Structures are given as C-alpha cells and as structure tokens.
View 1 (cartoon, rainbow, N blue to C red):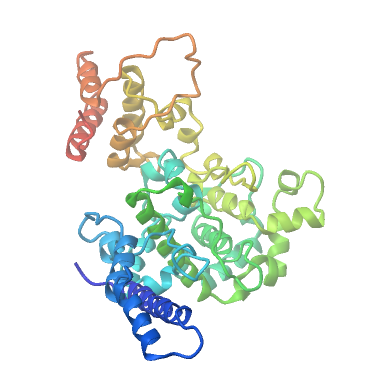
View 2: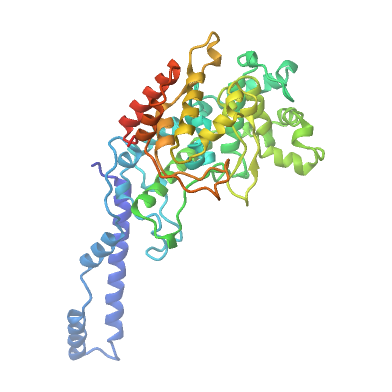
Length: 454
C-alpha cells in the first residue's frame, strides 16, 4: 500500500512530542531529588534513582502511544477513495485533546496526500450534490438514485462554468416566456431558457454561499453520518467520518475558487429581484417582508422549480427535505413539474420507494410499473431508464423499514422471504406480459450478480 506522507509526518509529530514530554519528566525527577548543594553522594543517589525507576525508554513510550492510536487495518477495495487516500494511516477521528494539545481532530487537509486529492477530484466530481444534501439513507429511496439521466446532476456539472451559468440565468429571467408559474410547464423551452444552467446556479449558491457569511468558511448544509466520541465508533464508522471530511474539504476548495460576485443575495440585486418575483403568493403568503426575502435568499426553491418547469430532468427529481426538526426546511418540489411527475406522484412509486421487506404482491406491482415505464414508446421522452443495480439493492438488501402506508398493528408479522423465493412465486402465476417478464429476468440477473438474491 502507498505511504501517506502527511499522515505519517503527523504521527511523527506525535512521536517527537512524546520524546519531549519524557525528557521533561526526567528533568523534573532530577530537580525534585535535589536538596540544597549537590554533593557527589546526592548526585549518585539521584542518578541511581532515575536509572532504577520504572520509566520506559523514550523510544518505547513514543512507540507505545503511537501504536495505541492506530485502529485495526481495514481491507479497502482497490481504487476506492479509502484505499487511494490511505485511510488506514489516518489517526482515530476522535484523537483530540485527551491525547494531543489540539482541541480539534487533525485537519484532513493536512493528512491528505496529493494522490488523495487527485482521487477525490474524480470521486466527488461524479457525485450527485443531492447525495450530500439528503444524506445516503434518504437518497437511496429517492428517484434520483434510480433514474438514469442523459445529463445527470453531478458536482462536475455545477462547477464547470458558474459564471456562464449566471449569464444564462439572467437571460432567462429577463424573458417573459421563461417565467413559468402555477401549474405551467413547457419542456420545449429547456434549451432556449437555459433550464440546466438555472439548476446549476441555484446549487452553486446553496453549496458555496448559503449561510457562510463574508468569509465563506464552510460548505453548504450537508446531511452527514456522524458518530460522537462517547459512542465509541467502530473502525468502519471512524473511517467513514474521515471520508466525509475529505469530501467536504474538496467541495470547500472548489467553492473557494469562485468569485464572490456569483453570490445571488449579496451581489446580484437585479437578478435577486427577479427571483423574488416568482410566485410571491406561494413563497411569501404573508407578503414580501424583509425577513421573508432574507429567508428565500438563503434558499433557491424558486429557481430549482423553474428549472423543472422548463424541462431540466435533474430538477424534476427534487423533493422538499430538511436535515432535522431544528433546522430550516428546503421546499423545492421539482418532482411535480418535470417529465417524471406522473410517476413520482403515483401510489405505485410511493409503495416502491418504501423499504418494506420483500413481498410478492408488492414486487409484482413494482415490476409492472417498471416494465410499463421502460418499454419503448413512440415519443422517447416518455420512456424512463432505471439503474437496475439500485432497484435490486433497494428491493432485496436490508435493513427494511415498516411501511407507513399500511396499519399493521393488528396483523401478524409475515415470515421473511428472499428475493429468490418471491421471484419464483411470481413466475408461478403464468404471466404473459412480455415487458414484465423481461424486467423480471433483468432484475433476477442483476440481483444474483450483486449477491442479494438469496
């Protein structure tokens, strides 16, 4: 495995600190044994006392503490961020002031090697920003994880040309035909009204300027997995926190490269006024007060929904969400206006998105839905492509949640079945609908390859 030079330098720094500390202890012992004038006898006595003490050697003490800080070595997949960033060489995430003179855990920017930053570029570039915003658990049940787009939403997409995106947003907002509100949608305007640029610009502001203040010393709100030191995180959990830190640092670095003039609420007064004019009754039912304007300045729901109305498919996969009951909510409802709206507002999709234990009737309904949506149609825009790996993991891989769509208090808990058993039961029904059988075959093949079938 490659050596992470910065992490090792950090550990050597700890080593040196321990050497100094041991030296100080020796001096104190020597000083405390001095009484008045030193004579040969007292010097001999002091020297003998130090030599006969149980104090370990400097080298042994340093090695013991450094070794105690190391966590068990994990096997990471080749080419993974964990492997390329040498996370096994990182100290425990909660190696704080009880072990060191610092009140914070070591800075990931200082521990990461150049090879690590290069790997992060490819890794985070390909990520959907809503995976950051929603968190992995929620993202796994949202359509963005399942639907394959021609131009997917990624960090690379939103960071490619923020300045150019702002110019396109200003152009779109200056043209009446682009200012769709109410129930209006017109996906034919996607290109001429710059729908993709509108979503890009909204998310650049949310990630790079929202709630930062003038110094921009943090990234936008991220829903991350977090373990407190008192929870005694496992090694896997500890490395996950480091991985998230590194991803956050990458986004922060990208944001710091941006010109502050891109900040909508602080430096784009005319554009901001045009955003405020979008559906005032919806976003400001009590009037456009200063407080309401500040609040909407920190959210970009009107722009995100406008992008969905104009045909940006990624914007059409957005939902309202909040990180917790103690933080403000984000209210974009692009799913109501994009080309997937018929699917995402249906009961069939809501039942599919719920992570219930495998159930034969529910699976059959799901395969009917997937087959109908992915079948070839005269208008290709009516077809929907699915990521079948996500589908298989979602349906077959625990943990499962109890469905909120049914009241099961008076029902007996059914015996758990594997996906293999359920697919077998479905095939016993002698189904004739060819697209359904094709979907079933594809699902079965993928589930077997992923190891989640039985």
